Image (cartoon, rainbow, N blue to C red; front, side, top):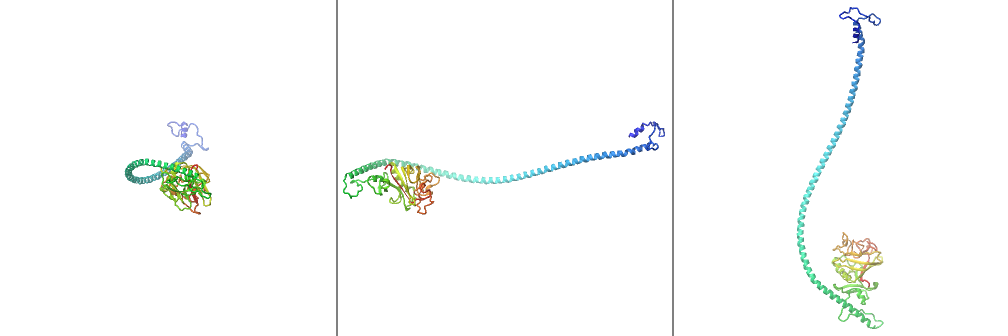
Length: 434
C-alpha cells in the first residue's frame, strides 16, 4: 500500500527492531503526541477502508446498473424477438391454414371433376353406342337408297324413251292445232267480210252473233278473239286453248274495252280456296261464280303472246280500285308457275302488291316461297307469296265486321293495309295492246 511505501522511506534500519531511533520526525495527529507505526497503519487502514468500500460499492453499483441495463436491453431484445417469432408463427399458421383450405377445395374440385368426367365418359359410351346404331341404319338406308335410285334411273330411262316417242306426236298435234287455229281465224275473217257484205234487213233488226259456216265450228282461244268476232255480251264462253281441253271461262266484254278472260273471282266466300297444287293447276269452281281458272291454262295462254293483267279490289266500305300490269306471263309447271310482271299502274296503291319478277307459286302441299317458314300454310290459299309478301287474294274469306286484323285473309298491302280482309277481288287477262 501507499502508506507502507512511505514508511519504507523513513530509514528504518535493516535488521533493527522497533526500538531503533527514528530519523526525522513523524507529524502528530490531531495535535496529539506521535503515534506508533502499528497504530498509524491501523489509522490509515481505518481511514482508507471506508473509501475503498465506498469505491467498491460504487463500482459494484455501476457494474450492477450496467448489467441491469444490459439485461434490460437483452430482455427487450428477447421480447421483441419473441414478438416477431410469434408474428411469424401466426403468419405461418395462417398460411398453413390457407394452404390446407386450398388443398381441401382442390380435393373437392378434383372429386367433382372426376365425377363429371365419369358421367361424361358414360355419356360418350352411350353416344358411341347410338352412333354405331345410327351408322348401321345409315348404311342400310344408303343401300336401300342406292337400290331405289337404280330403279328410278331405270324408270327415268324408260320414261325418256316414252317421252321421246311422244314428243314427235305432240309436235304433230301442235302443228295440226296451229293449222286449225289459222283456218279458224281465216274463217272468222271471211265470216266478218260476209256479214259486212250483207245489207241490213231492217232498222229494228237486232244484230245476230256471228254464225259458223256450214260444217265448220268456230274455235276461240281467249275472250279477246270472241270480242273481235263480235261477241259483246259478258258471260260464260267455251275456249279452245292449244294443248288444253275445252274450257269454260267468264268473259268480261265491257270493262275498259272488254275482251278480258277472268282467271279468278272472289265475291261471297261460297267457295274454299284452301286447295292443293294439283287443284290450282287444273282450276276449280264455277266460271259463273267464284273460281280459279287454272295455272296451266293461264300459262298456255300467256306463253303464246304478250298479255296484260288487271286486278280489281273491293273493300267493305264500298271503295273499288284496280291494279294494271302491261306485261304478264306465267311460267310452266316445271318453272313452278313463276310470275313475271311489268309496267304497273292503277289506283290500288303507289307500289305493286305483287313482286314483279321471279316469284314462284306455292300451295299448302308445295312450299316454293322465299321464306324459311311455309307461307301457304300460315296465310292459307295458293299464291305467289315471295317471302309471305304484300298480298294474297286467295286467302280465307272473312265476312263484314270479322275482317279486321286477319293476316290470313284476302289482302292487298297497299289497299287497306296488311291485315284487312277484302270483300271481293277479280283477276282478268287479255292480250297486251288490245
